[in-house]
Image (cartoon, rainbow, N blue to C red):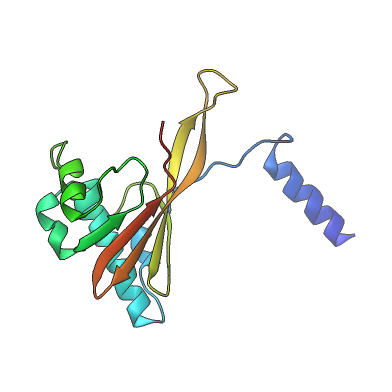
Length: 158
């Protein structure tokens, strides 16, 4: 009987059939960085700082501290790969002030040489004009010898 009550309570919290729970950014992203494995913690910190300083704030002068010269970008919209191409893309807009965290970060996880960032994204609901919904986008980066060497994203060509 307790199981049936729990299922009913969970169903009532979920809202109407088909309703989606909103995706929320992590309230304290810095708490996501520690790991029992020092190498994984270092990889997460490297990717976190790269994203915060270079991608989010567009301080492209810092890119060499994070990204290998041989960097490969698997983003379909990135065009030519390489560290210089990434820097040129990011430099199209002016730098912004550095923030202590990454905007809309939901989670960061590391396994072997890979680090995955999950972000809250708000998109237009194509079935309901004027409405939006939240979802999660992912970027995965590979680290080798203390530098980011590859990047994959959820993005698609428009």
